[in-house]
Image 1: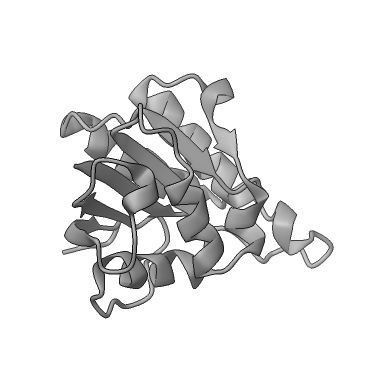
Image 2 (image 1 turned 90 degrees about the vertical axis):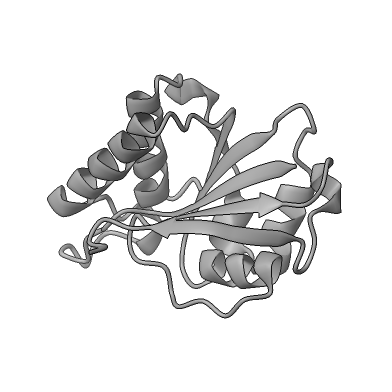
Length: 163
């Protein structure tokens, strides 16, 4: 079985209209969300073997906070522009191309595509992910290239303001 954690980037600001979408940084609230959610994972003993992130500033900052909290070298975070620019099929291709040596990975991305990937992998309708939401999907496969439509089960979904 393979496990993938899909993370939507934490809260980013629109406060400066001169900053391009790709370069939007996390807000103070976004930093707090990422700190909270990564600490939540640490307390559960969840430390993925690989982090893969969109290179957009807000996603990469979120991934870096998670890496710091989980004791992972930030230089080990893999960047993939297709997470920012691509559609669900592009994200599926990224997952399917992962090295089988990794059992557990975490992918940091953007809505609406990351939410669409959850629906594609599980076959279940889902709402749009909240900022810094984390979905754990257990894939019924031994190799990443076998990850396909409806091949996974949404085990849990957590987000900062969940009651």
